[in-house]
Image (cartoon, rainbow over all chains, first blue to last red):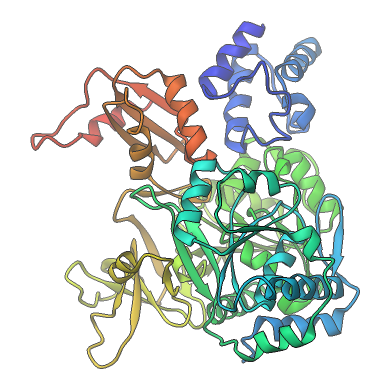
Length: 77
Length: 501
């Protein structure tokens, strides 16, 4: 799953070191536009449905946060 | 008409005293504290610079930044805000144009300011707020103030790669804020929700409406605009009644389904600007906030943030196109043809503006100023300076203006003005980029950069991010073996547009 996620993120923002950044939202690395495209890609790729309530900094600040969110939503199905 | 900003502040502060004027995530400040701190900073500044000096400001997204601005006005000077999160290269370029004798930074930004190799003195605002008030020094500065003194210099994208500093006078600001207040119906019961970075033109409403009316303003944390559910929660927690935001915020909220959660309960007065509002987005907002007023605003920085407004008087249909409306009071808006003639109603022309709201020009750029701010070709009798916006428009017979797009390669992206030529010029600074062409896919709001040369996508993206503001960095970088060409040898942009994925 991590590889798929990294592929999406690197396509989205080739200039960001996602392994190192742990405050993607809080530090303003990702902008609102990135989030909209990211949500679309994650929904398609992992067959999940991210709700507006899931859009909190903790879930998107780091790849770990994003993986936890994806796992949680996959389990809910 | 009271056009002195300090007179207005002082009478508002006398009336509202301990009421909160600005709030941010961690603190707030009252009208009388604003007045007191601004006078302290102004007094200290009087000892450092003469009246009429440019003062650069590097200060965070918090309540003290507007206080710093006002303090600079007390010292008889004008401020030039610089967003410290921008790349060093760009900040250095701004200082090169501005050549300020001093730069005021808060403690969080002082180190960044020092790293810029600035030749003048760097002053710490936190210290200055503790200085004693020198009423005599302030009075001396006050006596010499004029209503057309510069108030601020705000830098925007320039097609040559050099940022342009637009100079706005106190008079222009008063005209705009008064006109906006009238249209939106802002009064002392309002709580404004600020989105715009404080160094950006749209923030002038959020800073000066409270000073002129007694309203309060909350500086919404930046991350809320990435997480729309948090945004709506904040609007409700802070009981925000009025916002002036860029169109992209409204679009994103709808795209992620923000209205599925808690809706903004107190929001009643909404102005949007920066780019064309898609009506399918506006309709969702209108349906969810049925009692609210929605106003579409149009205009460039060179005319004090705006020109025209259109109050939406019906729930829009998805395929409708919103007019940009009628001129604000004290804005003279008209159209000129290519050969500088008047344009009859119903025909398209370039949107031109004159009046007390036209900027004083571009800072330290007399040639560019002379080329851009010109004598009205329709007026041969007396001096009347107009600004040609570079936008096309058509007047309907009822005096309502319609927007017809851009004359050049300037685009509006996420509320910011972007010159595609500036992106290309920057990319070409890399040796292994041979040729390139930046294009905008409007529907998906994506900037593309097509290029030839052996640079990798990662390399270019990383370089651009180090030099350009984040919103200007292309999201799609596409390497080509060869640029498609027209018969005359120029890049074939139409063919490139077919490569949009």
